[in-house]
Length: 231
Image 1 (cartoon, rainbow, N blue to C red):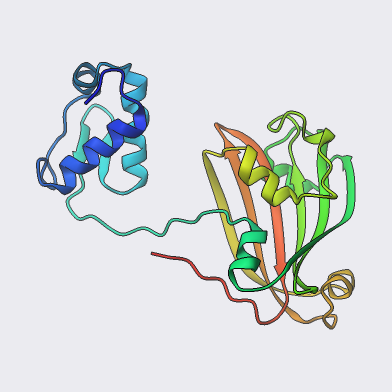
Image 2 (image 1 turned 30 degrees about the vertical axis):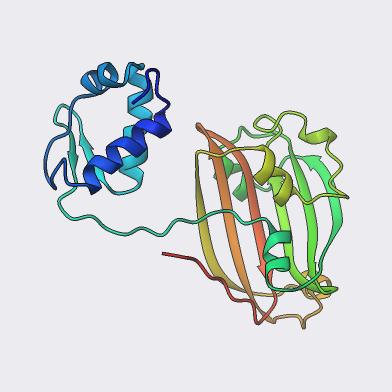
């Protein structure tokens, strides 16, 4: 292992040792200080590498007890934020996009609480439509925290979706997503081209960067949409 290894290389090396049987299920792995010495890096770098392995379900960490290889490894579903344009084009359709509205100001209380913002904090709100072959594919309602995305107020979202802009330019550390069924409101029905009260598939997602909320996004899909994920 090269000196001053990155956390990604350290994580990959430790994962290789675990999967290769060098460290058995339930076995304690070396301390952060010892791994930092081995890889000639800071303990913080090792800490981040181990945190990634915890997220992958390969090790467990206990305060004062150190880190151990899990006794029974489980498979986890990894959810990646897709770029809507890629999703539509991969299905063999022509992609289209239209910005419906844009404004800045305090978000609804439910969004403010979810983003853990102070009362009165202003965000950028965008409403947009995504199309597949000129048919409405999804309605996007999005609130973006300018404090987490410098320069976002100067971005022209009439030509690029916030979905694509954020995925390409703003890395996130963690997030939360909920999936639900919803009845189309009159406005949603008008924009999606369905009847009021039609059954919609809705996803609501919040993403974070080191404790600071980046965005809350709600996507509503007309009847017939199917969500697929690999496990």
